[in-house]
Image (cartoon, rainbow, N blue to C red; front, side):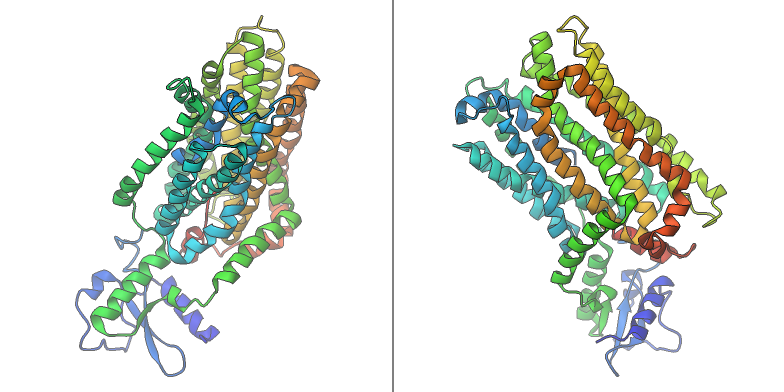
Length: 528
């Protein structure tokens, strides 16, 4: 076993970037000159009297120091509902039984990352990407050739899970490649954009695909997905590279051992944490934080409701626009592009939020020089209110039985889209900043709740709007949105006090200036 003193020495060598051989230690005669550009090493006495060398980055400028498509199947499925009702003899009214396939997709998305994303911490990002993407493509085949509805429900559970795993890994890759809040702002903004738009584009893409074949259009929704997803696998293979720091260093250390004959290891080689322990922490910590951390609990409710509305629109828009304007599947799919337009608007304005956040470092008295976590929430307050206003707008603009121009409820949908993006980005960024080294667990808790709401809220869509009427159904959802808009307001006002009272937040905070530990923390993140 490695002693705690030895591990502290290893951590210290990494923190100081190992500027060369440890003072007073002469390299062995068979050391190769090219070691200096492969990476530096430092000696530490480990495992009794045996000496090994720790391989780390060759300074901060080491050249090796390094999703929109996976979301489309989530929303495109519903475009073929009318045809699947006839094919599978599934009754879709008054209860939307066909939505069980969407529920299955989102439940896979909720639970699969808890199992498989932690495995990428040791195996690397690349195997995670390709295994998940391969499972996604394979799951589309039985969906495309399904002869009964049960096959669709089962296979979409696997597709949703694989899709969510690959999406969650992206967050980790961004943290691997872009270091620092300022550098990550644009990549994270674009990632949040693709996360929302990838799902929101689904109904339009699905409705457009079904125009290809009028006899069996819903199968073409899956055929096209198989074609473009399978075609992208070799492209990804050529352009993607491993970004997980520990995995890169382990490979380089292995190469050094082979070339020099010396006992050179990466720090990750000394980690004896079992896969079972990783899985245990992956399940236990997010669940505990969800139940004991008020910030995680209420932020999860906030983003989960917004995500549930995103999926609820898939059925609600078809219901209201077909009843009021007599529109078909393709036309209602066009209307749902308003959510994507809203996400575009949110992305355009996101740099303003980033500027506000970065400038908050000037007035941070707790940790001078560090941006204030609550500064992540400023624009999400009007964004959350716009989200609620969009629900009221959409509901009451749909009550005229076609007498109100279709653009009016569509604008309400667009406002809701702006709010969904704003809420999503606020939750991801705030939980990351406030929980630091526990960010992955906090985000996993939020992801679990978010996908669960996305799974079950659409099941209530038809009866909600049919029973209450379009106006009051939209109002009910809007009132819930207003109530949840209090969450960021409370954090902005009481954020420092809340963070001091949270054991997870207190423990998670690192000392200012500890840049290497900060970078280690960033490499552990995964997105929601």
